[in-house]
Structures are given as structure tokens and as C-alpha cells.
Length: 164
Image (cartoon, rainbow, N blue to C red; front, side, top):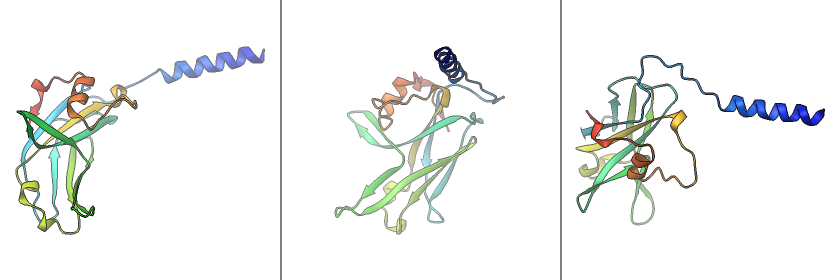
């Protein structure tokens, strides 16, 4: 009898874990990318607010990538937070971010951001990748640092990238 109760409890837990609900109304529910160009970090607080074109679901995961250059005609996107170090190994500065359902706040962090080369502060391009959590994959084999892998893994059509 005890074994039957344990078996029912196990199957009940498995069934409950497989249920998902989405109570967000008036929001999109697909993977998407927003691109923001000509972003400048100014000395007031070296912070920029990127407003999404629409509200994203409460449960969404957000990844932010910075265009750091190109190699053989291919864009190189680096995942935030992104840190740069001096030759002696000390932190020079970093890009970091927070996000809500409405926007992502990007910020540069360090003690002396005024000394950072303007090439890192002016005319920057960022991509915000929105992944609903029900579609978020957790695995040791997924490398979220690799923008192209994320786009491929989540079947995101880059031609539909919203340019802001």
C-alpha cells in the first residue's frame, strides 16, 4: 500500500511540474531582438535607458549584447556584463545592466570613467534579446556568451530584429 501511495505522489508531482501558465495579457510571447544604435554614455552618470517597443512578459529573461567590432565581415557581439582590464590585471571598467518589463538600463562602472577612451562610451550598439522563461533552456552545453548560438538555439529570425 505504501508503495502505491508513493507512486501516486511521484506521478502527481511530475504532472504538476509540467504545467505552465501565462497570465500576462497584451504582451508578446515570442523570442525577439531589439537593436539600439548610436548609444552614448555621458559623464552625468554613464547610464542609458533602452525602452522596449512594447511591454515584455513578467517571466521574460533578457540578455544584452554589445557590438564590439567585426571580424571578416561578421559582427562580434559580447554579452553583458562585460569587463575590461588593465595590463596589470586590475579592472579598468565594465558594462552592466538591469531590466524590467519596459526597459533595460545600461551602465558603465568604475572609479574613473572619465579616463575611459571615448570609443567605448560613444556611438555604441546594443542588442536586447528577449526570451520568455518557458522557452529558456538551461544546460551546461549552452553558451549564452555566443550571440549566434543563442539566436540559432532559440530560432530567432534576425531579419525581424527591431531597430530603435
